[in-house]
Length: 205
Image (cartoon, rainbow, N blue to C red; front, side, top):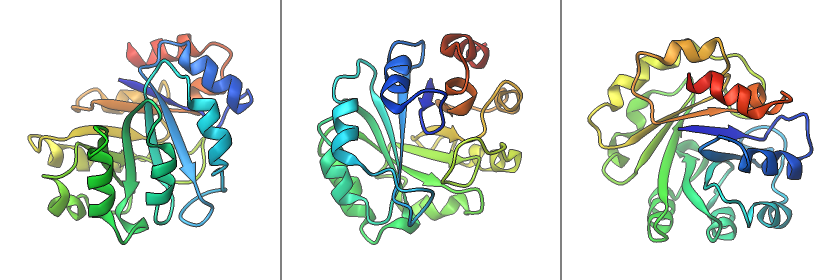
C-alpha cells in the first residue's frame, strides 16, 4: 500500500486531504504532533476531525504525541485503518493498545531511527503493525536513512504488518525493493507536486 501524508504540501490542508482522497493512494496518512514529543503542534483536533470525517479512504494515523490516549478518544470514530504511537511517548502502552483494538482498529508501534527494534518484543503478540521511521519524527522533507532497513527482517514471521515512513521518493524507494513492506508512507514527494497520481504511480512501479 501507499499511504500519503499531508504534513508538507503545496496546498492547504483541506485541499490536500481532498486531493489524496481522490487520488490512487491506498490510505491517507495523518501525522499528529504536539510540539513536545516532536515537531510543531498541529493538534487542532476539532478542525482536523471535521476535515477527515467524510474521507472515502481509510486513515493511517501516526501519533507523535506525549500520552496520546485522550487524543485517540477524539479520533476514534473516524474511518481509521490503524493508529500508531511511540512507546517512549506514553506510560500507558497496554491501555492504548487495548482501547484501539476494542474499536476494531489496527494498532501499531513506531520505531525511531535510533531505537532498537527489540523494544517491541513484549508487545508483538498484542499489536498488528510496526512502523519503521526512516527519518526522525517531526518535520516533512527529511532525507531517507537507509540504515533503518536493517530492522525490517527482524519483523518477518512475527505476524505484524510492516510500514516505513520518511523520505520516500523516486530514489529512496529503490532501497525497498528487496524488503517485505506492507505500507509505504510518502508525503512531500507527492504533496509538493502538481500531479499526485503521477508521483504515486512512480512509487508503485
